Amino acid sequence: MTVALDRLDRALGLIASIPDYPEPGVVFRDLTPLFADADAFVATVDALIEPFQGRFDAVAGLEARGFLLAGAIAVRAGSGLVPIRKQGKLPRATESQSYELEYGSATIEAHRGDLDPGCRVLLVDDVLATGGTLGAAVRVADRLEWDVVGAAVVLELDALGGRDVVGGIAPALDIRSLRHV
Image (cartoon, rainbow, N blue to C red; front, side, top):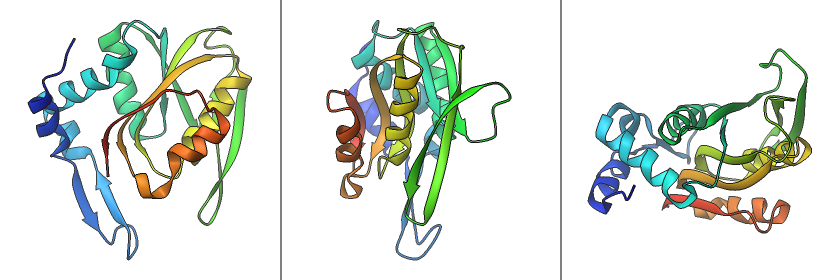
């Protein structure tokens, strides 16, 4: 499954940049136009799968837009799917990890027992920014004894240093980003 670069470039070109949202000085990257275009969405999903093809048994989608991508990847790859959610959204026993935000902190969690220890898992999110969410997801996966084969994201905001943050937690983690800005 090789994705034609022109299809992927067109898909990634649909990402909208919204200045001063949600606050002045921030440029929000809105992937919903990409999700709304069927060909762009398929090209993106295929490109996210490609470097990890045959290497994972399940996909873990990070809240919230990571769910959209992870679900499509799981169906396309014939794999399982688990959500990594904000604290308090999962009804059964969970493993959780808190992480720092610019103002305050947040906690994410995943159900215990949905995947067996040693299960090969691909972490998926839409954007890698500060690395807080992805780093926390790596820690949750480690405590659940998942074998994280990598992380796939559509967009990486290089100036925010997320790759370095995650690298400090999991130096060997294979992080693949379709576009760097």
